[in-house]
Amino acid sequence: MKVFTSIAKIGKLEIHWQIFIGLLLGILFGIFFKNQVQYTNWMGEVFMRAINMVIVPLMLTSIISGVSALGNSSNLGRLSLKTFSYYIVTSLMAILTGLFFVNLVAPGKNAALGLNQNLLPEGLETKSLSETLMQIVPDNIFEAFSAGDMLAIIFFSIMFGFFITKVSKGAQDFLNNFFSSSFEVVMKITLFIIKFSPIGVFSIVAKQVAANSDLFTLAKTLGVYMLVVLVGLFVHSAISLPLLVRILGRANPIKHAKSMQAPLLMAFSTCSSGATLSLTMESVEKKAGVSSKITGFVLPLGSTVNMDGTALYECVAAMFIAQAYGIELTYMEQFLIVLTSLLASIGAASIPMSGLVMLTIVLTSVGLPLEGVGLILAVDRVLDMFRTSVNVWSDTCGAVIIAKSEGETLNY
Image (cartoon, rainbow, N blue to C red; front, side, top):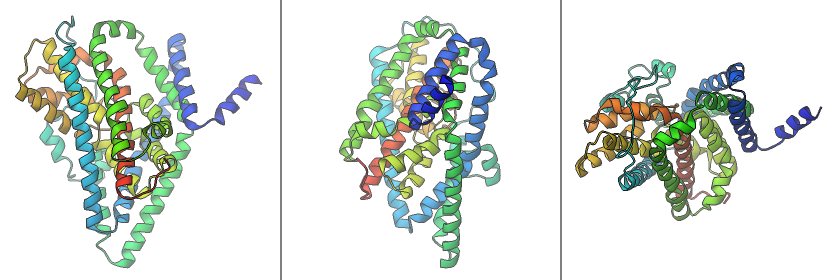
């Protein structure tokens, strides 16, 4: 009876506390009941399948309704300029922060590491930067829907939403009502799925902890490299972004951070900004007070395009690999790493470990050996949890800053 009473009490907590409890229980279960984790894996798999089910319709309906609600091309152009300017500036800030720390500490110079020939996780393919950018324009939008090609879906959604404003008044009203209503339905489905997020997080975290029982060994071998990445992520998320929220957004960054606990914990647990998108939109609208017009445009775009944490990680990882191989990079080559990390982060999918795939683009740009990916593969999943949280945190900060620049009144 006490067990059921405790479960009932947990169910009455706010969602971020429920997710946090699921996270802690998952860690403990993965450590002490490693052999039993196989019996709980299905819960995480079902949860992620449900989340993935709504990502494409959520992205499609939110962007189309958001763009069409802007009313005209001048509003769309102004909002697009602000949004992309923010994404580019914050990504560059993140990359330069990582470049500073990796040059200061030089974690790869004394790293005693063996090469791992299993370069990339099975099922993930590498693409050139030109191929990634070319695929922004889909040759078959239904294939893009099926494959979850987010850049192509975003491009199509922006185009569709923009040209809704160019049709007759009757057709415009019908389409606006259709996509706005569709967005509401998708959000209702999403919020229902989110109610099960503590269970999903528990299962996902337990599986990861059980599969990485040698974390202490990894930390000893790659500890300095991990520390450089984590310090860079901390500086960017705890200093750079809050300053932008305070100065440009004229909002309280501490209150904003507290109101974003649920999506940040979800991002940390799932390693997917796409899977977190619905919860991020809900939190930014309801707790921060940002309008649906802004969230419907800025956040879906940010979940694919704005990857501050991934950009920082790719820069640090490339420099670490160069140092480990004893390769001295010139200032021009380091600048090329900065530029390529920025572009690669834009093309990174909002799924777990996508940054590892995009890292191969950065390595190729300066002629570093792709075998170097094997050096850091063992700790990538751990770092992925932190960099995804920074990605989502930057998205929410951007939504607040842009909303404030549009004259909206926020809750803090």
